[in-house]
Amino acid sequence: MKVSQAYSGDEEPPTPLLKVRLYDPTRRDNLGLEAKVDTGFSGSLLITLDHYLKLGLQRYEEPQKAETRRLATGLGVQIRASKGVLEVGSVRVNCAVYTTPILVKPLLGRELMNEWRLLLDGPKKRLDVEL
Image: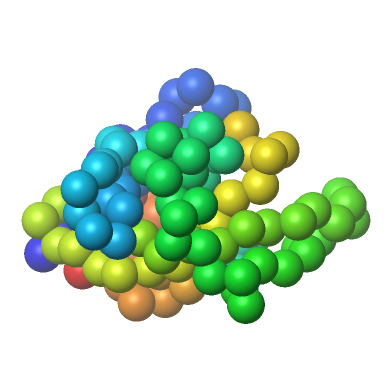
């Protein structure tokens, strides 16, 4: 399956975003999100604390995956981890979902990107994802 999406013009330079739907592990609750494609984040999906709590992901936390990570600035931040189900187009995948209180926008990281084929077409300002 292939998904294509235009880059966001909200930032300069334009940013590749991917529209996704995130479910709690029981698939009872879900949220639509636009996640920045971030090759600098090694995890799967990092979401805001507000989104994390709205989905009740604190009930499904995996304490063994909680850790302190370093930002590009060198600052260490505590990351909480939970289970979730990510939907891209019509494809659903189980994945770890991370959060930290300082995050402003969701990030899609390399753990998921390495499972898919991605084309960042900067001149056309388009993201193509093959799942």
